[in-house]
Length: 310
Image (tube, rainbow, N blue to C red):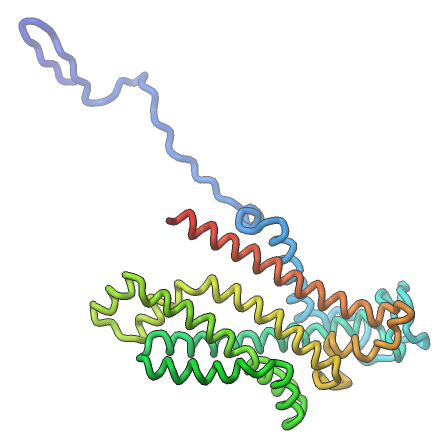
């Protein structure tokens, strides 16, 4: 305590606050758990979509392990059997357990669609970045090439290629990826061209940064969220494309089967309302609806984040 005394008054200056002065409370940091973070990030419908997507991804990996029977095993003499304790989803047109068939088929439906979507998105995004950061002639050549490819309907392209080279797992993956690379290219190029006009990219150019650095550090991270939404849409489109090809008999070939094949081979039970034809269709529907719910939730969260940051 310092004391300055004058002839008229005494002034007391405290270097430290009095002991009885109220103390400021330190901010309390509350660590939120995983469930709280998910609830804050996703809407209720988004959480439902996330659960459905994770469920089918897990089934794709562990389905054959937990299946009650082998995928092609004849387990009943009753064809198009109804639900029972021995066969929870009934039996197919040959008396095989439908639950096991669906569990085995998930690895083909989800696995092939996921591989083709990753290939289409990665290749399309790469060429989209190249077109956006390169000169005019490179952009023109790539754009016209993918415009010509995107003008061919995906199913027509798949039918022509499979008729020429046959149906196999690698061929189906390649055809599905090839059909949707142009769409991924157009989305990524559009995003990259817009980002290239922003100030921080112009500053990077003024610093003399190379095109590869600009594409990798300045452009690509700022287009991740829209490309993830596009990835989900491409996944749904490819699931439907592969299921449609299998329904036509050009997809996964026997003795293996994906969900589209299961619908096709059990179509005779439709008039009876057999679970063998209904359950694969329900599986396709739940997967596509779940992915769409998840995409919508991610897109809205991204829009709110960008709106709050401005």
